[in-house]
Image (cartoon, rainbow, N blue to C red; front, top):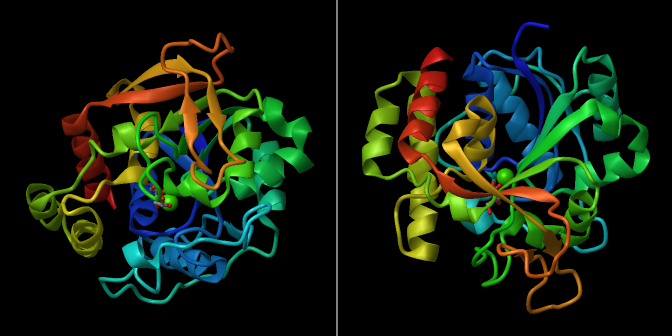
Length: 310
Ligand code: RIB
Ligand code: CA
């Protein structure tokens, strides 16, 4: 018990996942116990390789990493090399990892880590929810040792992969449906709040001033900005995944509202849509605290402070 919040990250690096890992490791308020990887932005082999490289770069080979699902529960994998490049972390040179992935499966690492934690653990999935759904299927007994799930995914409004769906939920809607039906406390950091965390030229300039790690994050964002400019026409790519981590470091930066969230799995047109009942018109019990506002300035201050500490 060191007064820090114990968390486990589930990631698909991806530039913003990589930044979320750095934010978690640099924070004095969080204890990153373990990381599990999932196929998403790029295939599993690459998301795992990228995770090991990032933790090696920041001198944290002590944090165990286990590879999880290589495909969604029921659908073929849909990836995002158009956003993150072939490697999933195109842009700056990152040396090869100095340690290997843990032999255990993602479910085994999640179970062992949760069971050995003296206090309930916060799960922080920032990729498709496949690993989390599989874990909850296999170890429902450990739900009582999970304090909450803080996820990056979904949107009250429009999507970013289709007009209706955000990428993480689009890739594995069935997994997301199971997680939202888990009755665990969920905080959903969707596009409505992550789009307020765009890192433009000013933010990139400040990141470069933070030393080696800040400089690498600035290069991540420069790459991300190129692809974002091409696809969406603006050059301040949102730091989606770090928003989820920052909301645990300082909950006050995120304004949320309790809502019932349902996930569309049937329609080809709107598959992966998080149907968020903002006004409670369906009279269903809310199953998530959904992000509706972000203190952008404070978010970036938290990010800069953490990166400077690495
Ligand atoms: O839609 C944004 C999400 O999809 C982020 O988690 C990004 O890393 C990708 O996984
Ligand atoms: Ca991600």
